[in-house]
Image (cartoon, rainbow over all chains, first blue to last red; front, side, top):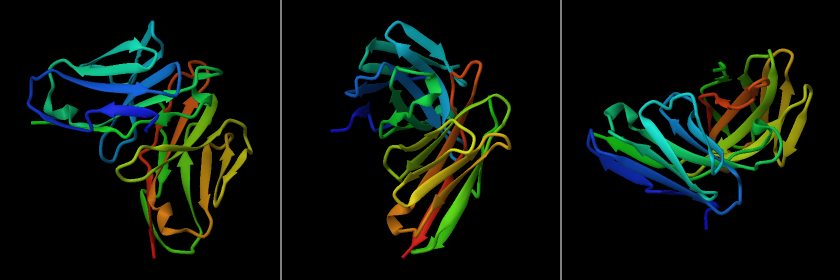
Length: 116
Length: 113
């Protein structure tokens, strides 16, 4: 079984719909992240959470919200989806010890989201 | 937000060839450099995390070097195999905030049998 599981793997929806992408992990990591990947661009950070009570905006948080329901669960919501949010979305985790970016990140398999 | 650049964008090599590619990043306030391997339809997988100037890391046929003073890292693959075909991502962060990795757009490697 995957250590970092994203659901759904693929989703097609219409403009204006509310969408939730879910991420769960069995690695026991405190830190969780949501990224988006667009063709020709690097992964861009949307939101991150260092523990259940900690939520932080990343580089491109506008139009998105998150919820950290438990240590193991971190959900990303698009309140009113628009076509330029069509992308591949990744959830990732990392260990909680040490400096933030000294730790390797562990990624899920991604959710391919298309908004028509 | 840092400017992290990877070159070349894509690369085709023959099986058995050795190859290398580059990640460039701002050298000011450097904190950490990550390399990931991303196979199509799979999740990116961490290869190396490097923090010290002159660091060299190795994992099987893959190795990486780091020059923080001039702001670049090389990834080397010795004796490429078809299963090495993937996109190789690097990501860098700076000290101070040290709170966010900035990813490059990747080098797509295809190893031809």
